[in-house]
Image (cartoon, rainbow, N blue to C red; front, side):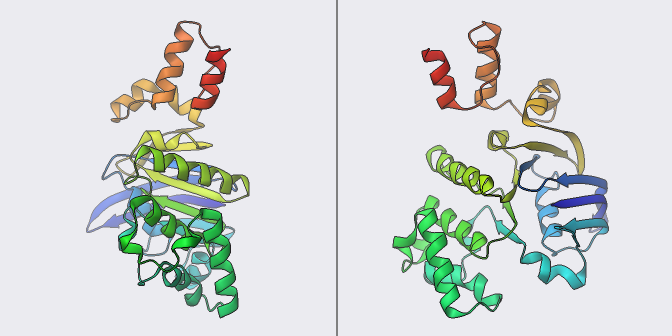
Length: 265
């Protein structure tokens, strides 16, 4: 779905990326993790056409160029860290509609699409509310609705789970997994390795370079390297490793419900 080849980028005479290569598979969940200053947010801004770059980036077969930015943005939905910074209207309805209005959708189609996405996300009953008055979970769901309402092929989460408490985060992770099962390609940008548990593939970014990549199972095995980069293993990975050490389970289990089922038996 997305191919990044030989990416080079400088900002204020500082080199951020030099020969960066990343492949995002279609209909998969890919996490790109790194500490603050590793280049994660800059990469997002490049992908949505806010920064010019050197190299070759294609999104759904279209090269990311000045002339193709509008076409590419129709293929992408983005949710940022702080939803308050994304809100542009005084009601949830108008805020979600803003995306479609910019794409010249007809009023009837706008109404229909907003109804569909808000019912799916469970926020249909707050369409007349001011988005700034909502709780953190509702705000992020409104931002997610705005990112999904035009049915993009790619959803980019730029530290979008950071401000959520564990309960709300778990709810949104389940929604993301459902959307992925329906064919949506998801890129999860985060500094928190816990957010990578739903990933098919993980890239670990450090100072603009890919230090580690692979499936989550492959990446989690590199515990020493992850510690060196400032990451502890996710809780469920640590738990699985300890239970395997004591022969209580035979293989890693990364979902709490499955772990409970196995231990209960």
